[in-house]
Each structure stands twice: as structure tokens, then as C-alpha cells.
Length: 59
Image (cartoon, rainbow, N blue to C red; front, side, top):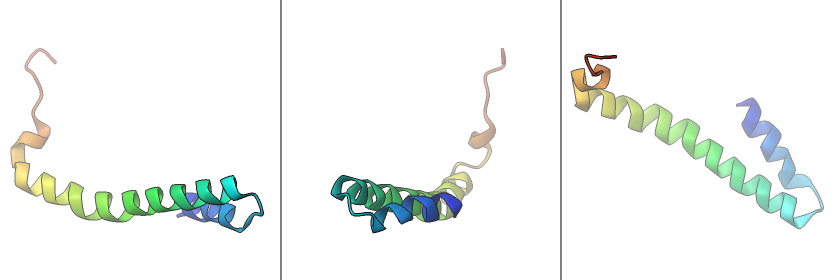
């Protein structure tokens, strides 16, 4: 959340490239934090079951 606020503050500058960077990073972080980590990861862990914790025997 802190990173979203900090990167989102770049949107309010007068430099166009910084605004574009702020919008892009804000969207990327927001999508990662909400969609990927709240929906996709738990769904995949539920589908894969014990395969989530598989490791080679030598390890």
C-alpha cells in the first residue's frame, strides 16, 4: 500500500515522463497486489494441492 501511494504521487508532477512512469508503475503494482496475490495464487495452490510442496529427494 505504501509503494502504491509513493508511486502514485508521481502522477502529480509536471514532467510528462514521470507522470507516465507513475501511472504505469501504479497500475502494475495495483494489479499485482490485488489480482495476482489475492485471487490467482490461492486458486492455484488449491488446484495443485500437494504439488505445491514438492521438492526433489536430493534437496
